[in-house]
Image 1 (cartoon, rainbow, N blue to C red):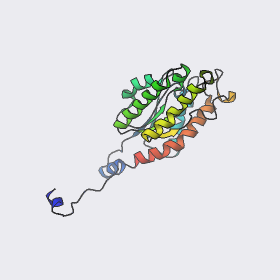
Image 2: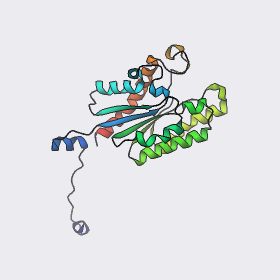
Image 3: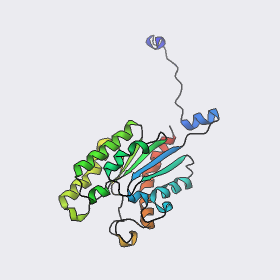
Image 4: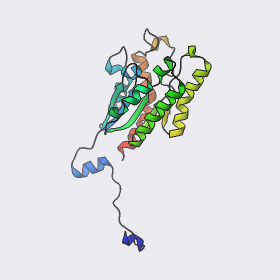
Length: 217
């Protein structure tokens, strides 16, 4: 400090990533978790666990040589944004560095106030960011029977929060899947294995640069 005050240049240690530090010390580099906080769409309702999009994301990372990435499926069927918020603390383990927020479908189907959904998602994002966790927000759409005003208010939640908090956004998790009979199970709501693959293909290009950023630190 005295040297700095006298105008002398103070030597500082160069920044070093966790991976480089591990290589220098001969220890194993820490693993990085990507947690998917979601509902039955993430849980893979009606399918094998290996067919759900979090498992498919893990496969993509493995295929591309990401040896330290673990994708954790924290999807629970029936979860609303409120339920996701209540269990957020145990989902955000210390090794979680990226959080995919894929909630809201059940809020819409139950006709929950868009204001409440917005508030819950805001708190999820804020909590994650206070822990240094990057967030990818997946948007949802409300069903047509709830009316145009409700649908517009609900749809606006996701781009608004993305802009407010500067988090990455997938505008609609079921883009190209919703309403397509061949991509949905008999209930017309839950994607087939092919539909799940499409979700993974939409998410992976957004997650890959986030993973690169985390791994470089």
